[in-house]
Image (cartoon, rainbow, N blue to C red; front, side, top):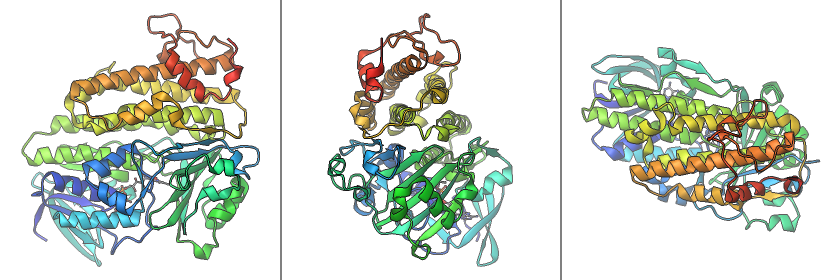
Length: 558
Ligand SMILES: Cc1cc2nc3c(=O)[nH]c(=O)nc-3n(C[C@H](O)[C@H](O)[C@H](O)COP(=O)(O)OP(=O)(O)OC[C@H]3O[C@@H](n4cnc5c(N)ncnc54)[C@H](O)[C@@H]3O)c2cc1C
C-alpha cells in the first residue's frame, strides 16, 4: 500500500471512530485510515463495556459529532445514575436508601449498546470518506519526519502504510505506550467482571411496595445506570437499547479480591452473599449468558498523550481511572477534542508545539486531579451518609467546571486554559486543591460515621445549587463570561465545602456549625484556619441545600 494518509488511526473502537468523524466533519479533505483488528461487524449487546454516558460525553456525541437523531432513535435515553446503599438485610430494595433523580433530567444522556453504536459510527465515518481495514492488526510504528510507517498484519500477511499523523486508539493493546515506553501505573487497585443477560431487567419489579414504586414514573428506574453498593464494591445494572441488560461487579482488590469474582460461578456466589436480592434477577444459568468478561486492575495512567512530532494516544490507550461515574467516554471526548484541534491546525500549516504542550499538561493534570475521587474511596461505599455527600460533591464539581468548560469549547481556548490552569494560583489549581481537601475529609470522617440508614429517597435536584449547576451545562458564554461563570461556580464550591465541613466537624469534634472556615484548610486532623481573611462565613442558601443531604438534621445542637 503506497498511499500516504494524513492520519492513521490504529484501533477502530469508540475513541478511534469518533476521532475520525470529528476530523472529517471539520475538514472533509483529510485522508484517514483506520486499522481495526475486529474482522466483521460488532455483535449487539455483548461487545464492550462503556455503555453508560454522562453529561460531557453526551454533549460530545449529540452536539459536537451531531449524533443526536441517531441516539434518540436507536439508543436508550438514560435517567441518570442511581445508587442503592446498604441497609440491614439488602433483601428489601424498597427500604434501602436510594439516590437518584425523580423527574426527567434537564440535560440528556444515553445508555449505549456498544455493538450497535460502533457499527453505526463505522458506517458514518465510511460515508464521510474514512477508509477502514477490518481484520488488520497494527504491530509497530517507524517514526519519520516524512511520515510515520505503521506496520500491520492482515490474514497473516505483513503490510505497511504511511501517515503524517499516527494515533493509537488500540485501548489496552497500547501500541505507542509500549513502543515509546511511556506507561505509567495508576495507584488505584480495582477489578471488574461483567456479563450481559438477554431481556429487560426493570428493578421496579424487585418490590411489591407500591409507595416505593410510585416515587418515580414507571420505567424511569429501569433507564438509570443502577449501582448497588456496600463496602468495597458496586454492582451495576444497565439497560441496553437492544432490550438486553449489562451487569457488572467492580470491586476493590483489598476488600473483595479478584479471585473471589473472576469466574461466573464465583461471581454468582459473590452476589448470593453480597447482593442476595439480585441473585435470581441478574444471574441466569451460565448457558444463557450472552458473555462473561473479566478485567484485573484496570486503572492506568500515561506519561504522554500528544506530541508535536505528530503522534498521539486516545481513549483507553492513554489513561483510564474508574467507571463509577461512567466517565470513560468523557475522557475520550476531551482527548479527541484536543487531538483533532492539534491535527487540524498542523495540517493547516500552524506550528502546534505550544498547544501540544499545553493540551498534554492540562490532560495529564486533569487525570491527576480526578484520581482522589476514586483512590481509596471504595472503603467508603458501605457508608451511606458519607457516600451521599461525596456523590453530590463529586457531581457538583463535575457539572460546575469541566462540563461547562467543555460545552463552551473552553478546553481548546488558550485564553481560558492559561487563566485557569497555567498560573500557580489559577482556578484550576484551586479546584484541584479544594477537591483533594474534600476527598481527604471523606476518608478522615470514616472512623467516626457508622450509622445505617433506611427508607429514604434523595434526589440531587432537591438541592438548588445542584439544579443550577446541571441546568448551566449547555448555556453558551463568550470567553470573559465563561471565566466569570467558572469563578462564580468556584465560589459556590468553596461555600459547599465549608458548609459540609462545618457539619462533619460539628459531629466529630463538636465545633460550632456556624464557624468561619477557610475551605482550603479543611481537615479533621490538621489545624484549620478559622480566623484569617480567607475564612468564610456560612451562606444561608447553601446551608439550606447542604442540610437536605445531612441525614442527622435534628442532631445539630448549636
Ligand atoms: C469495567 C469498565 C466499565 C466501564 N464502563 C464505562 C461506562 O459505563 N461508560 C463509559 O463511558 N466508559 C466506561 N468504561 C470505559 C470504556 O471502556 C471506554 O470508555 C471505551 O470503551 C474505550 O474506548 P476505546 O476506543 O479506547 O477502546 P475500545 O472501544 O476497546 O477500542 C479499541 C479498539 O482497538 C482495536 N484494536 C486493539 N488492538 C489493535 C491493534 N493492534 N490493531 C488494530 N486494532 C486494534 C480493538 O479491536 C478495538 O475495537 C468502562 C471501562 C471499564 C474497564
